[in-house]
Length: 432
Image (cartoon, rainbow, N blue to C red; front, side, top):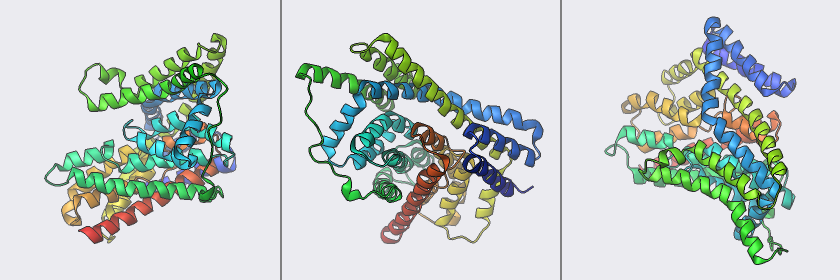
């Protein structure tokens, strides 16, 4: 059977199970992975492929997701997220845009858009509850904003890898940084506007006056509480950024995303002991672990589906079809990246794979390297669905049903990708 037909059948199968029949995403994804393997005639290798795909995702995200979940639960239960939400609202006056800017600013320094989302999600939720925003709005804005910066800004891994592969003689870092920043800001605003439109929210209402109410505690208590509230978030960020920009050997360990988030979880537990009982904290940690475990099951299912689609040769088939077509040169990198992203789920991996496919044909494309790069980067926003770990993290942590995630995250990302491509085209036409 044709790999592309297998891919389409698998998507329809999973969509029916999750959206129509309400089957749990993990079961749907594993069933879809089995279907792909069987249709591809790879029955003997299917189980090994599924378990390998799951284990790869688990090893990458288990500590990060679980630690982030623990931090989120503790900050919410202690009232820390309420304090942070008040502080952000007082500073920016536009709380929904502010939470998007937080995700936008930290996704690249953390080298993980999922990490930025997990860290700031409790703040987004508390802000939504406090100001009566539509459920899901702040979470979607945060998710789309992290996508914008991580997908387009240097030195996120995919962008950096392309620049490094091409070399300084072929692509200018300053040009990549400036072009990427201009496109990323527009993409973030497109995501913000789309989320507001979907939830029927007027952006004019994204404004709060006198948002910070008076505290009833004395100044010392406020300072101590603020320290305990911010420390579990700030310390992991500092550790991760320090590792990225220094050559200190010990930072390679303590500044790794998993260790940094684990340190944040430990700090959240320790600082909570000042005002809460150990039994309360144990209950919160248990809740965080259970919630993190459910998220891990879903994203591991996505890893299994991505591995099964790769086994079936779907990525190669889509890429070959595009390369053999008569599509305009500027669209080819975009569509190759979109095809790869649709198949395997991870944006960072997509850009690595797409770069390997596109760089050899760049002479035939006859485009500037920066334009090729941002055409590909735009394609990584399409199409994010069931095999994307971020899809299920948003669904589970934000408590959203599958159809809602498809209508917000998937469609919102697609609109951002198309906007990014249009802006890339405009930059090419005006400046090259």
